[in-house]
Length: 488
Ligand SMILES: Cc1cc2nc3c(=O)[nH]c(=O)nc-3n(C[C@H](O)[C@H](O)[C@H](O)COP(=O)(O)OP(=O)(O)OC[C@H]3O[C@@H](n4cnc5c(N)ncnc54)[C@H](O)[C@@H]3O)c2cc1C
Image (cartoon, rainbow, N blue to C red; front, top):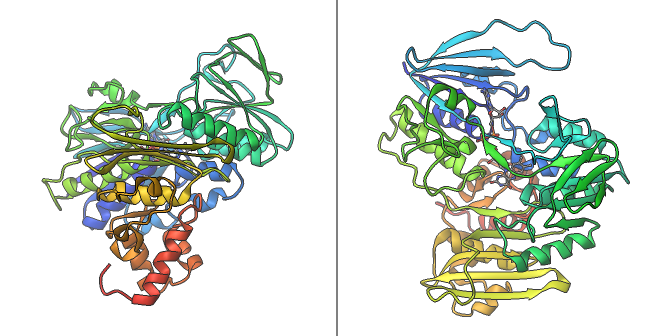
């Protein structure tokens, strides 16, 4: 029997364990997870900070999962070392709290295949005082784990001045959530516009204006130089940002320390090929910690696609399976702000081999940019126009030609016949991006008796994130009720 050891019980590790067991009831699976919690949907932490979801409702597995699936789960344990020659890992309990309690002695686990799913860790800007004795200073919290959320919640009282370091996707989500709790939020961002990875300057400025109306302040082109506990931040231009709480959301770095120690090849992440193999063919890496050519890391969909490919290979279900990359759609999960960004958004309007359309109405918080190549959507930014976002995302996901009336498409008034009906969506189309729920899963749950929106939400988790997919799920319910299709 093959022994698979998975390092990391986050979104990639948990999914891999599920995929392995689904394909093979005999394979031996050990999962080692450093966090003290059962795996949870990290994507939903912004919703927890905003107060619209409880930590419990983000869980991916219940307490019975490991026993029911015959998985040796070591919760609150970490892999400290990999011995590649003897193919064993050393596992020990993670020390918790200020007072250290005697922990269990380290154990050795043999493996035939080892999978590193160690995720990533927050990057902390090099401002004086943010880190003390190797830890974040009191009043400074990262935004990565459920424990971070609990710490943020405890300090984020109404009227509290809060500084958020970083105006990327997560920083904006944290800022919106905290402003919704009544905190006085200032976002400090080193670039001239928000979310520069996903947005062009025009969209960034419309987004800042929209968020400004919701009470959030911005310091762009600025960096924190010094943290004064209980007082706030001094920025590099000498100005001050008052803050009782500083939330660090300035980017992440792949967690590669185990791989480095074991002599496995590491660049920005743990380097893997299309078979998700590292430089040691017995060791694999998936998720945020892995670096696959051409894949944007730091997003969940690539991690889950990689888990499926690796499960095919490790169980022998499809030894020829290869991971070729994932096209990703980014959605901001922030109340009252609807934003989707996908594909190549940085192409200029005068680029000769692309058709680029732009529309903006800053006073109403609307901005749309569409990049077309060979009549197909190659990239888009859609802010404040959910109908346009839904249609354009469908066109992008399915790779079908855009309708000839481009303006109507940009304004959300074009529903191309082939994209309008849920019947025409492929079963694999992702309906709920927060929970990665496909049309096929919704159809299966409906057929199993979950016929109403709350029942489907309970069965599949669709709509329980940002809620942006509610209309699409209702559309599927109507279609299923009306047609009771034999195959979907
Ligand atoms: C607030 C927030 C919002 C996000 N929103 C989105 C979004 O909208 N869309 C999107 O696509 N992505 C989003 N992401 C990113 C997404 O959550 C990650 O891409 C995803 O979690 C990656 O999964 P992973 O398993 O690789 O890493 P993780 O989920 O981070 O899991 C890694 C796990 O490995 C554990 N670990 C590390 N080292 C060891 C060790 N030596 N031994 C044992 N365990 C170890 C860690 O403790 C952790 O539990 C968001 C992230 C955050 C924090």
